[in-house]
Length: 105
Image 1 (cartoon, rainbow, N blue to C red):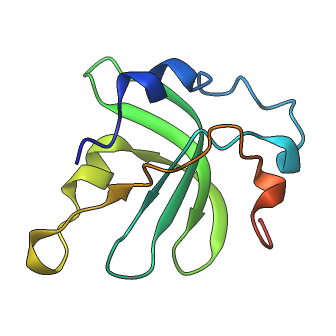
Image 2: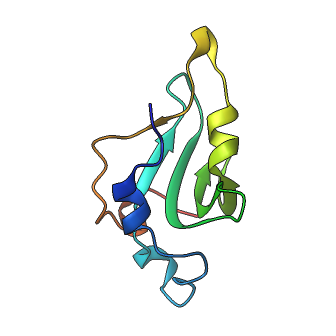
């Protein structure tokens, strides 16, 4: 599955551009998840790096929920049972605000 589509690239605010937006009002543009267990990444910002990789900022839910940075290459490098990888929620609504996530960090 292609994790980062052209539509998502166009919708993503550049890194650091939502710093003045209250946390609960930040818009989650896309959601990546581990189809075999724990691990969800809610992306609110992203920019392409000089090497062609992408750096994202968002709410990361692994062992606990916390805000942080992660890269597309990190997500793509994960290999799970049976060769599965991290997936993108194809039904995600780009207007979804962080306030709609239960117990956001």
